Structures are given as C-alpha cells and as structure tokens.
Amino acid sequence: MFLQQLLNGIALGSTYALVAIGYSLVFGVLRIINFANGSLYMLGAYLVFVLYSAMNGQLVLAILFALLATAAAGFLVDFVGLRKLRRDNAPRMSGLISTMGIATIIENVIQIWIGTETKQFPDFLNFGSFQIGSAIVTSTQICIFFISLFLMAAFSLLVYKTKIGKAMRAVSQNMTTARLMGINVKLVISGTFMVSGFLAAVAGTMVGAYYRAIDTLMSSSVGMKTFAAAVLGGVGSLPGAMVGGLLVGVAESIGGSYISSGYRDAIAFAILILVLLIKPSGIFGKKIVEKM
Image (cartoon, rainbow, N blue to C red; front, side, top):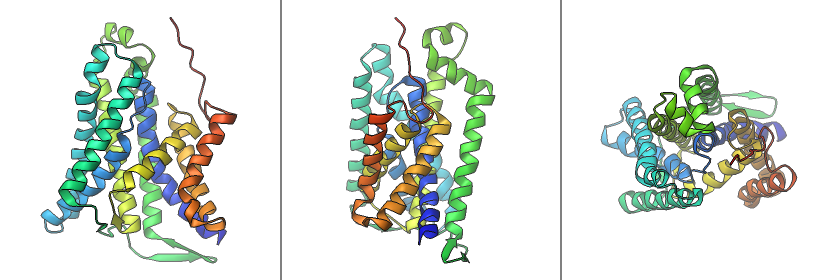
C-alpha cells in the first residue's frame, strides 16, 4: 500500500513541480506570483482535447499546437495584464490581482466554450504496466516522471548555465541596470511567461492522460497546490520548486490513502501553513533584502 501510494505521489508531484517551476521563474524575474498559471495548466489540457478531436486523432500535432498556443497565452498574460502596470510603476499587488483576473477570464471562457462536463482525455501514455512487490507501476507514471525530470533538468541548465539564464537573473536583480547593459528586458520577461505557460500546458496534458479525464475544476485545485509547492521549496528557486512539487504530491497521495481521500486537497494547504509558520523562505529559499 505504502509503495503504491509513494509511486502515485511521485508521478503526480512531478507535474506539480513543472507548474511550480513556472511560478518560481516568474517570481524570480518580476517578484510577483502569476496566479494565471493554474488556468494555463487547464487551458493546455483543453486545447489538446479540442485539437485532437478537430484533427481526427493527430495526437502529436494536437499536443504540439496546444503547447505553442499555451506558451503564446503565457505571453499575453504579461502583455495584456502586466506590461502597462510595470511601465506605470504600479504596486506589485496590482500585478497579482491582474493575474487573478486573467485566470478567471480563461476559466470562464473554457466553461462557456466547451462546457463544464468532465471530458474523456486520450490515454496516450499507456503502454502497459508491471509489478514491483505489491505495487503496480504503469507506463503512464514512468513517462510522466521522466518527461518531467527531463524538462526540469533542461530548464535548470537554461537558467543557470546559459546567456539567456544570465539575462533572466540580471533582470531579476535590477531591470534598469540590465537594460543599460544591453539586455532586452521586455523579451526576457515575455520569454519567461512563455516558458511558464509551456510547462503548465505539459503538466496539464500529462495529468489529463494520467486520469484519462479533464474538467473545469482542475485549475483551481492545482493552482493552490503548486503555489504551496513553490512556497515549500522556496519561491524563486528552481531546485526548490522541484523538491516542493514532489513533496506535496507524495504527501497528498499518502495522506489521502492513510487519513482520508476527502482531505487530499487540504493536505497541500496544511503544508503551506506549516512552511509559512516555521520557515517562510522555504527549504531552498533565501531572505530577500530590499535595497532603497
């Protein structure tokens, strides 16, 4: 029982980690929480569903176009909701409220366009299963873990080992100085939001394949769970987002099994509250000193 729930939690936590990375990337650059990320997670999954139906089962093309479209939606979150606020030096709280409004718009558009009924999702990661002791390991779980691991490693290398990553870190430290050094600040910020949207769409697509279904409630639940994961690991830290996502996924799965499935969602919030009380900066987070 424990091993089975641990494997379930690792698979689910891997998807949480991808969305949490998106939170951390945006926070690292702009010092705001992008609450539209959960809606992009749902949007990516629904676009795969719609395109898969419209393209007569061309799954690879449907996923590709859906990921690109969600990345473009991530760009629009910044372009429509945040760019003017930055230009006007609006308080960061204004940006946070703006992303919450955009999230609500995306969710309601999907509900009006497609409906609120649960939709069957293509089970494209299922190639069979095998047994380890009393636990059953499915190919879907393996694919989710290794796809997530690959993306985590790839974007960690992007941020910490490339010139693009250096530009992102420079913008996060001081936009004005970065601009004077010749860095295209607008491009860096837009690219960060596109990466965040892309990762959210990948996570939403894999979760849809895992449960073989999607619904319009998936954004609200995952949004707060992945926010809790980002806080647990340390908002702004990519390794922290990865570890936080896995810990939340495992805690949710094991807690739901041994306590009650009705408390699965509450476990993430309990973790969030405990982290804020004990170590507000998170496992890998650092205290940020605001300089005047």
